[in-house]
Length: 220
Ligand SMILES: [Zn+2]
Image (cartoon, rainbow, N blue to C red; front, side):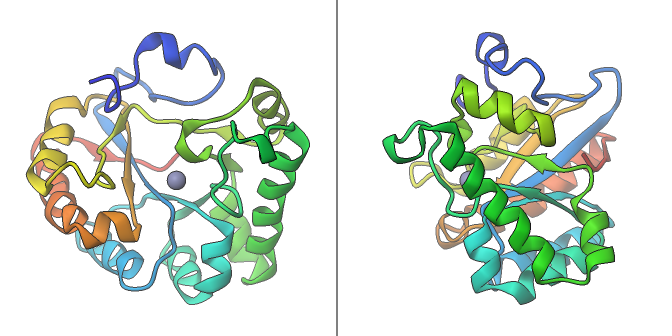
């Protein structure tokens, strides 16, 4: 519970970050972290297309560098891109604790995104500018600086699809238990989620469940 649905106290640490959208609206906001990754990201895109759903992808700059084709696919299919730093860095690590180097790593990812795609399309996919800190770790100074430029996006529900300790049915159960009006839901288009089979099991079933429950899918 503590992990899947962050408690109010934790949410207050970053008061202007987005955790949950309008609680009066029957809608959820799907997000995918840590891509783009060959095979995995295209599989997610095909599934979303089948359901006619748009989502937000918080991408790692270095993965975009390695897999620009998959990056372009996400952009061209009308999804939104968020920044997840260039190297998936930990905000609390000694190396990046100074706000400046953390910011630099984030800006490196931003500039890279702009450099490898048709500017007009990328521009649309990138706005509003969104940032999600890897691991949810962000020092106060980093937060204060980043929020000047980016909308900081946390989550209302993390499925824990990346966890080696969980199997697909447990990941699905997290969605069924914690999804609610306005939830920002986090999956991962990553090898961790894929190699365990968690993503392939839980995502299609979660989409069916959320549709049956009557949720609309909205973009951040
Ligand atoms: Zn991440």
